[in-house]
Length: 263
Image (tube, rainbow, N blue to C red; front, side, top):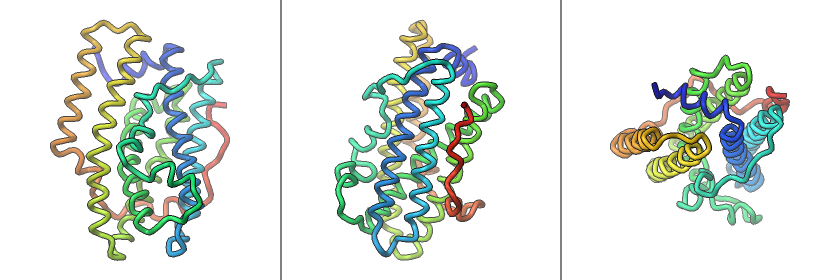
């Protein structure tokens, strides 16, 4: 019977599919680390209090990239080049979501509007990351090879999401409510399209590696399209709502441990 657990178990059990999975994950996390590092360096004067939190966010993302590379190393595997059609982070940028890398490569200080864009983009993508890691925790939190790494990353993603809620609510109270709501909606609607396309591309590659029968690949593709239809109809709204998080000042402390749980 096809299930989330059986699907990921199959991917984790095969070296080549595991190699692709970890390489894609490591690449996205490392890219997120770079983006947050540049944003922290370019924060405008009126938002300087955010700089340590953005740096902490970036440090966590860098740590996650190292964790996925350590999981590969533990099996004696090297990362593979991330196929462009599976590069979630770069495809989001291509669709105009978040701050453009060309902007971040420069030295011009960001504006408060740029910070709204950054936080809205993060709130949407961290929602996705938190949900995906919660799903993996549910099925593989006790897995002897990947369980500890999944639990650690899941905790961090929940903290990142709480931080985004808290800071966006602060900006709403400061008079940026219209910009926050507009940007969140734009980000969410673009993200669900990119997530659909990346999911289809990843599953197609996994299918070729694992030699899935056509019926299985078609069923998975249909499930991805069905999820997109739900998200396009109403599911995207969970990505734009804002609420005071239970965990306050989630990124106010020191950066997370840099040692890898897979080492």
